[in-house]
Structures are given as C-alpha cells and as structure tokens.
Image (tube, rainbow over all chains, first blue to last red):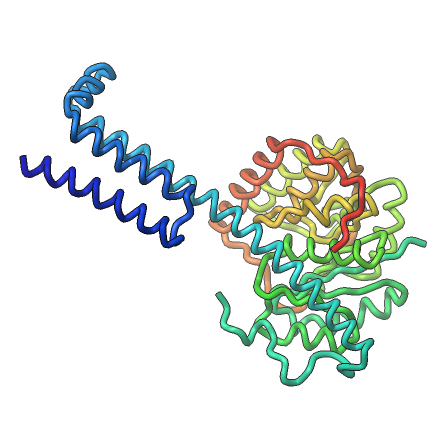
Length: 135
Length: 241
C-alpha cells in the first residue's frame, strides 16, 4: 500500500511542478507537454492497476513492471533525441547570427570610417572578440 | 573580367597571415580580399587590418564552413562574381588563382587539386584510402574526374556563390566533401585544376593512424548523409546580407 502512495504522490508532484514551471514561463509548452502526459499516465496506471496487467498480458509481457520499465526507457530515449535535435537547430541559428553579426560589424566599421568617426582600423579602446569571455 | 574576391578563413593564423597577405597582394593586385577571423584568440584580426584588407570578425569559432559562408554572403552583398577560398596557413599559392578563375568559364566550382599526375604531394595510410574513396565517389556524383575532393583551395562562380551563401554546410568536413555534393546535385558543374601544395608556414598536419581512421569514418558518414539529403536548387533571387 505504501508503494502505491509513493507512486500517486510522485506523479502528483511532477504534475504540479510542470504546471508551475509553465505558469512562470520557465518551460515552453512543447517540452512540458510530454512530462504532463507522463504524470497523467502514471496516475492512471496507479488508479487502475488492472489496466497495466491487462496490457502486459496482451503484449506478451509476463511481469507488468517490465512493461513499465520498457516504456520508460523508450520515453527517455525519445526525450534525449528530441533535445539533441533542439540543440542542433539552436546551434545552427546561433551560427547564422554570428555570421550576420560579423557582416554587420564590418558594415558599421565602413560607415563609421566614411563618416569620419574613426581614422583607420580598430579603435584602441574597443574590445575584440577574443578578449571577451568565450562561451 | 569577373569581380573576384579572395576569402581567407583564418583561425589563429597571425603567424602565417602576413606572408600570405603580402603574396596575395603582389600576385593578385586587382582582386578583393577579405579575411574571415574565425574567433581567433591571437592577433589575426589586427594583423589582417594592418594590411588594409577587409576583415569579418566572427564572435566565436564556427569552423571553416561557417567562416566561408560569411565570406560568400559578403561576396553577394558587395557584388562579387567569383569567390576563391585560400587557406591562411600559406599552403595554397595565390599565383594559381588566375588559373582557377579561368577554369570557371566552363564550370561553377573549380577545385585546386593536389593529386594530379606529376604532383609531389603525397599522403599515406588510411588517410590516403579515405581521400581516394571520397574522390571516386564524388567523381561519380559530379560526373567529372576529381582526384582531390578535400582540398580547401576552391573557386566558385556566380551560381555557386548564390547557392553557397545560403547552403554552405558548417558541419565537420562539410566545407569540402558536402559542399561538392550540394553543388553537384544542384546541377552545378564541378571540375578541377592541378595545383602544387606547399608546406604550411606554421603547424604540421597530423599523421597519426587512429586520427586518420576517425577521419575516414567521419568523412564517409558525412558523405553518406549528404547523398541521402534532398536536392537543393540554386536560389533564383539574390539574397542580400
């Protein structure tokens, strides 16, 4: 009975935490949706243990708990892949911005030189990219 | 005469850059020169500026592919017809540039190839096999006989500049192998011209076997994935930077 309680409490906690993060805009909906679905599924499985047993039986899994483990593993794998994809697209966007920044910076230098705001090259007090803390 | 821009992607090349820039200036007095400082932590940018050439300062290191894409965008923004990539480490001879540009008459991309008959450039072991296999595969894709597909010494014509300003790959080896795949599959003609490579003025390429093995694997992964991607057409309208 205590294991049952832990599961219910855990699922409720995750659900509340996710909603709170969403409310504070700390998490975008597209990432939170998955975890909300997970906590709802856990709650459902706890409330109706027979469903899990039935499903495991239908899928040919002898121990219902193994089905839970298998499902969790797949889910975590999917999340990891989704995050890798997100990081990839972020990197691409950052890189494009870096290229644009370099081109705009050059344009500003040309314009400033033409406007007589600087004589030639780089101002002495200007901090180059290398001097800033690199990410 | 087409307007030619020499792009030198440079990452911590302050030591070799003065010699290269001086050579470019004397060999090619009429071309535009832009140094793309790829987030160097040394004086690369200041050295380039002291030669009076244009400099694009990338805020951090993005790799040769990203640096070249910035160069292609610069070329589009300032109406250059032809972009020639020359490495800032001095291994490419600027005196070969007119030959590469001349070959653009019948092609969109011209590679300055190191492994032509009579060339003194030699590589051994897995790296050699990788380069040979890449060359054979890319020859099939492009329909031209290419012997050196990993050369960084390349000239791109107007259509290639338009394509590369948007679609130049920034991944590992993307600037060599994958860019050729993209160009060939976009219907651009890729050819090569034999050039002589020189020793790098600073630094040595690595020849460790395991590194070469990793290089081989990554090169082929990059090639396979590039071949399974869908084709990209040359953008019809010019993109302004």
